[in-house]
Image (tube, rainbow, N blue to C red):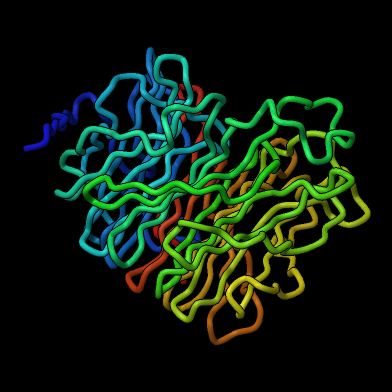
Length: 417
């Protein structure tokens, strides 16, 4: 029998409280009062959320003397959450910042998997832990990538297919010393080559690993989604000749053993010697449509970013002309989008800067419509960054990092449809 550990649910040591008092009116864009999760006295950041029916799982990292991964579970579509449970069995086995958050997915049997970047013995690896009892406890974490390689790994993404197989993608520096295919375009970043790798792992920890793309943007998040029927898609920010940083999507039709040449989603004209640290988000709806959201420069304004959206109805071979998602001209910068595809439509969350305030916004496109509805601010009056979003027939859940003088926490809210 494999060793398992259970973390005691100590409410006095872990925070799980309503973010607003019971007599406060909820924000106009939410269905209920926000809930705050986090570890008191720690910096809580890197929210990720998964939803399957009424089951919701939120994960994040808490950093005090060490950095560890936590999960909190709701079984009533986000109305209430259980006390948080630590995911990683080895203390300080996590490295989380900005777009490099722990990622969570729920499988068809209710299994919950969480993947994150770590640095064991000074070597960066992708780690994953799974719970089969509804996040009461987690099995000891396993290393997802090949362990005999050099370089760094991170910016993971995760999905579980209909067979219960976990698919993970990440940026990988094992070939950092290999000559770049366009080295002349990036004199400032020689030796920082990053490739995309992906692995598929079943419940018995049988693993296959495959390269997805070579020489990509080296610190933008990856995104992975599995379509009904098993096609696996990975989205990332690619480097095109001339150092143009555009979004690309690669596809696997054999369970992650091989991937097609990546398709360029949109020619945005963002020429950059460096990394914007702001990558794409990918989702696949029940009809097989591939949906992508990403940030790039506003045409004609090199000082502002905006959020764009496109979709493919032919399995990622071609993508529709992009649509701008953020619409507020008062925004100085829109960034860090996350997308979810549910039974009623597509929802995109992002953060943007208005003056000195960071806010989280959300916008939905119904399946019955060709256009997005109005954008809603879901973060209220407090600063919000790095949102995550999930959607099912039971509702839409959003989570993000909220900054406060006493330490950052994770806000979770059920958003209106």
